[in-house]
Length: 89
Image 1 (cartoon, helix red, strand yellow):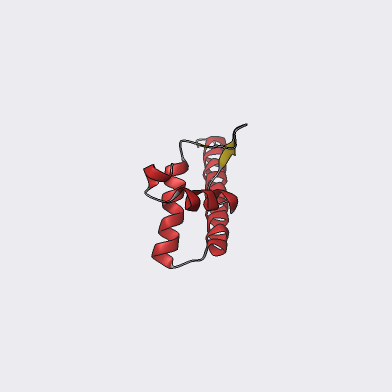
Image 2: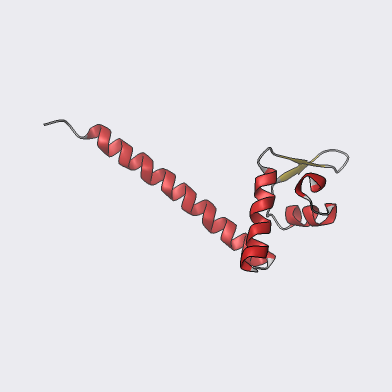
């Protein structure tokens, strides 16, 4: 994952340790990443370089972005359900 993202293995491990990128460890201690990991790593890097945020702030921003996404999904579902329940007159 490190070579694919252009980062050092230590930095990728740090992202995992800080909870910025999800990964699982196998019995040998190797990290296994989800298919979405490269985009998650790129997102962390964009927040770091683009906004100059420290890693703690990046964690907060990522949590807020995830919350916003969940709220938008719930709103769309709610709007769709309201449309489906509205009888034609």
